[in-house]
Length: 59
Picture 1 (cartoon, rainbow, N blue to C red):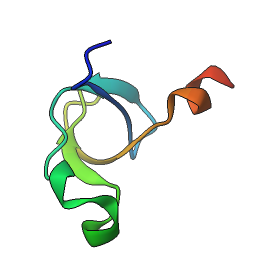
Picture 2 (picture 1 turned 60 degrees about the vertical axis):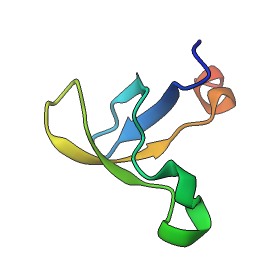
Picture 3 (picture 1 turned 180 degrees about the horizontal axis):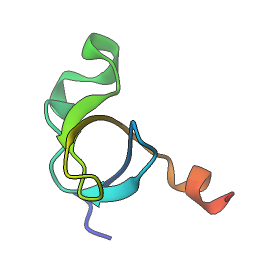
Picture 4 (picture 1 turned 90 degrees about the vertical axis):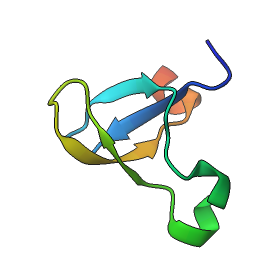
């Protein structure tokens, strides 16, 4: 996996990887962990949060 890719989950529950995660340099403590990003599954702007790889492996 590319080190710039992030695995995220949108508000609808779709899990996907993205290379673009807006404003990540500001840190989670400043504006929270979620971002608005276009989901490739539902093709709408959705609130998305990063997903830990270990969380995906447990399923």
